[in-house]
Length: 118
Length: 414
Image 1 (tube, rainbow over the protein chains, first blue to last red):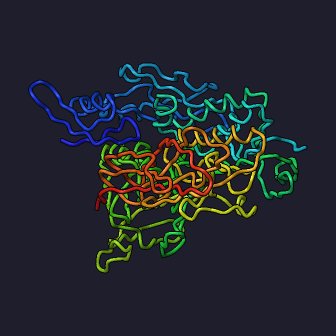
Image 2: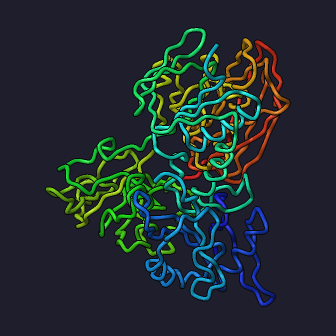
Image 3: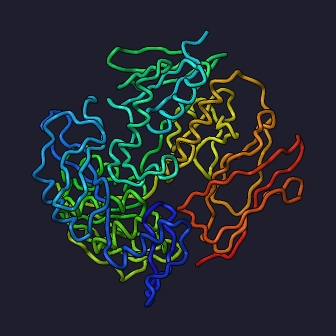
């Protein structure tokens, strides 16, 4: 099967073949393409970027992201959970706002310095 | 004496990188930014994929900007004026900038100017959408501002016109926030965004992409009620009988970006009709001595990593001492565009960095660079697509009077 690698903007067109010996990948410009293709045909993962509410006037939402990839099928559940999270202090970029979100082993981090003017 | 060695207009990624490079070389530098925070459009780019080339990490746009903002704030050689808008620039032996802010009207003088003021989105009216003028019709960048900075959802049932990257990213973003994205419509027969964004923004969320279809009309008084979509042929003409009405409350247009060059034009700086930005040499200096152009006002980039790189080139050059230039035109064939378009023979490095887009999708393509007809550099590409900008380093040391030509060939993909 053919897959487009989404690891970086190169968008390599990968040819993926499932064989008895495992998964054979061609068309990748770097080795990250192989890891991506194997995961994509076994247990697809995605990073998630979104926002959380804050308590600060003039700064209604703060951007966040997963600091790793989570199973693709968990995205709706993580989004629903993050709707309940409120940033109530002035976090810095990189600070963890929720650790091990929904037992994925991945943290949600703030991606901006919230001490700037809103 | 000018107030500053370099004044950078715009505090987005291009302006931040240019200012840092200039100040690192000892130039007294000022950044003028019209908004209340540095970062430019990256403030609202909460999605990731930024910095893969520069930092070897997948950062969000906000984080990418933050790394530069931290350095700018800590740099003793850089001043920043926020909520300040440049209204006029006059040239004598130095540049006199008139700016307006809550402090009133001020004049600032500069030895060198670096334009880093980005680009603007094309609007629905600029692509001939007919009908009423209801609320709910907006550009992708405006929708992104609503969702990512203001925390409000601009609509519940959305149609997206244009398959540019911001449109694709907003399709995913709106879906994640609970809106229904009914489809992405693209008048051209190929998508204009990166393939990875088609995959991770549309396929992942089962959002249909309709190629060779466009939005012809909008309906609704007060709020948008529906759009009429229609197939188009390869000449972009409507095909009668293919019209379809789609009830929706939001139309998001992502139909291209236009470099913003009113200030450059006010100085009579010649623009390249292909890039819609100024002609520049390899230092990103325009045809006006001492005026540089970087980032999306030079040409619309798809990767911020390259924006930072060219901005740094300009920043370093602007910190140097002024010298007369010996400019050589570069001839080109087969490109949508090629930057730089000129070479300053008096400041050539062993290798010159070029950025280009192919004029059409090609397979098994070859870039040949000739000096007086003799091939001095050649590079092969498996695939080239107009939406994907290429960067190439070319060793070039032509002499005055020689002809330098860049030639792109290869099998056209229909």
